Image (cartoon, rainbow, N blue to C red):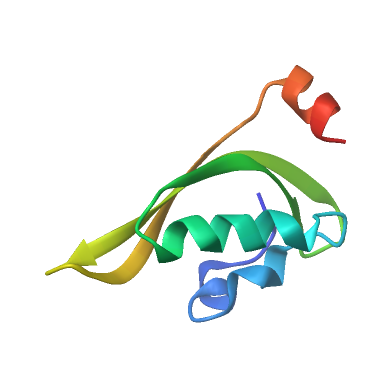
Length: 88
């Protein structure tokens, strides 16, 4: 979707695809949830390599081992049109 190759994305910060229209507060709330081992879900507008954009309905959850957060898993699906219209 983003137009980036796997090689261009591996090891890069996720904000490589952050669209400037996304409020920083959205990600602040997301990290507040994740940092205390709680999942987060919401609509996200991402930026493509060529400058276009796409929307995702994201569910992000921390991955823990022995009580410590060791990573994050994100499942993203195509959002419905009504939710995107409301988010805009």
